[in-house]
Length: 64
Image 1 (tube, helix red, strand yellow):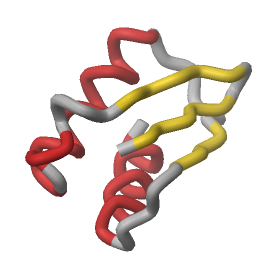
Image 2: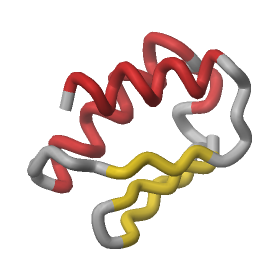
Image 3: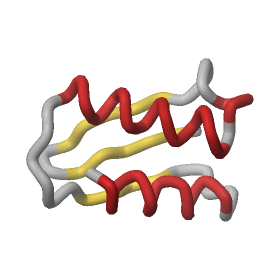
Image 4: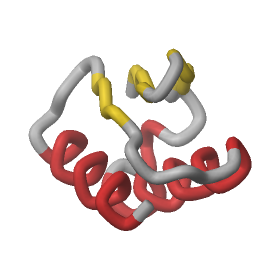
């Protein structure tokens, strides 16, 4: 999930309003939520409470 975290951090820093990432690695939903929260805490802590996260097959859709 390191690649996921890196890509998410990169897109957050670019100010993307809708982020869609395809997951290739298998992980649990809990790991995904925790990894997403960790990235937001370090890159965009002001958006932690308002961010929406959806799963769509092998894709993650995030609306910061």
